[in-house]
Length: 297
Image (cartoon, rainbow, N blue to C red; front, side, top):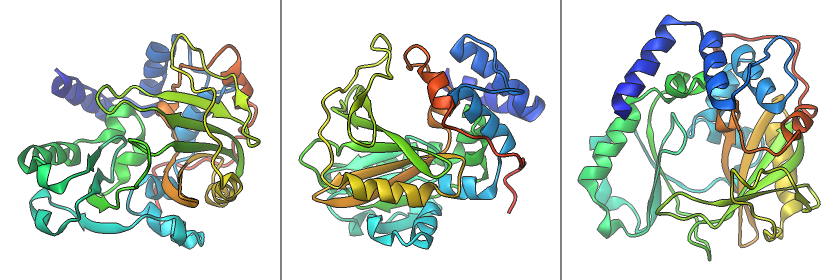
């Protein structure tokens, strides 16, 4: 069923304009009309950026491999985890020479990660099959986030981040015109079900009542990272070229670790916000005057 749905959506993106499909998807998900002429909410402004600010740097920084060059350019190489290998073809992976623990990712989408805690127990056949599927699919067209469609699909194998938790706490800095405004902390993730707790905090690590508890499990007492000031500074540097970007970081044993840059969180259709929070956050985002199309260099 998913394969059929995927093929239909991709076909539609080749037939109908991006803006029309975005409006339809927004109506179905958010249960309201998308105002692109005069956007006011955070979600609406993300949709405007998605359609009207298609700069190549967005696509390059959404690429899990090329973004490393951007981080280095910003003099933050020390935040990068070790890159073990890059492959274009699944069959070229040298499984025998990989360390005991590592993480496999594809560069052209979101959520396509495989965490390997014991290299001896990995099912190589099923892993290769999954990776081939991920590489063949156009995540950008499927989710109407076309920055991903411009990425050359590759497989990267990276260092496993050691943590006292099953997975390290994830700190997502929402940055507007180069200024971090607040942080989404993700913790207590269930590896089996994918469920997790999340909570928003300001830069002083005070809890922000942004989440509708009927739609999401909240995290109200997350531990403040000991190097929060260093993380804020890294987020400032990495976000300075964009109207909006979410800078995802980790903090382990006093070290700031780069995760990724996300330009359209939840595809610009986050429906878990409480009350007028979506509108409040929208006031932080000043849309640029100049428009760009096509993600050309």
